Image (cartoon, rainbow, N blue to C red; front, side, top):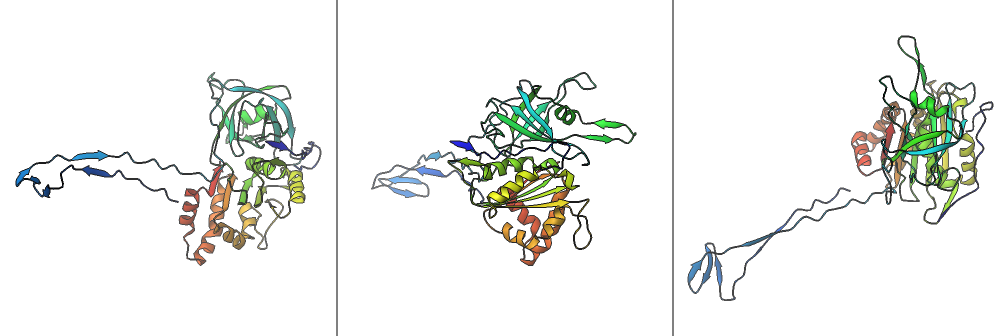
Length: 366
């Protein structure tokens, strides 16, 4: 039985700074069973019995190949997917919705908690769909949008009856000079406690945590891509489980534009205090920080400062990389690793393909 530790962190108000193997191929064998007496002799033309050749009939038994089930290294056992679908969503209620970026941050990000009454049994690393109220320009109901879950399976309240999201309000100016608001993000950010929300899912297995409690888990996030990693880290450091105690290394890289955009910083500070040997966090604040060459500090720029250490970790059998956020960061990481891998006579892109195949390189970008 799992129990939540009293580690709930006060979310900031909007008036303050944010704290926020390759599988074996089984081939069917053919067995030929031929019956004859001890005195019989087998020739090329058949069975010779008493000096007379006789044709024989062979019985061919074809066995169905045994199905080889690949055992996942991730925590997949019992995972539920698509319990609720768009035609029959679960209706939950908003319990909490608070802005977790400062007023001067470039854009708003909100943390919200919905009731599920235990009916949406998700796992860390999964996503849910949200169907916003209203209709589109064609008069049809809005389509669902998927969001990574930002809470552990126990939920922020520790009773397995809630699910949390981390959502950035999308507002931009199009080529015609018109202000455009994202339908679902604005619907969610404007929700008031007590309001109903239609939920689908849960979905996804790509970002599930590894089973190994001694693993090294490298998490790369930009902005709200932090969501699945908050769920990982709460399970690792803020909860007690009879069947799981994290003893490995969790290393988080989080990229944001400004320090006022940092998400869940207060929570991460508490995790460092609780487990300094097991948790590392490095921030990349692009509009405020530069490296020694004067380049803006993007997430790949920050990682480059630890490139050799990261490469040594990536060569270990129990290291897993998870990436969530903007698509561009993966190429930046490739650029770092190509030369390091080459020093060891390794083709980085081929090595990365093998990491993906063995579930050690997991990407969810947009």
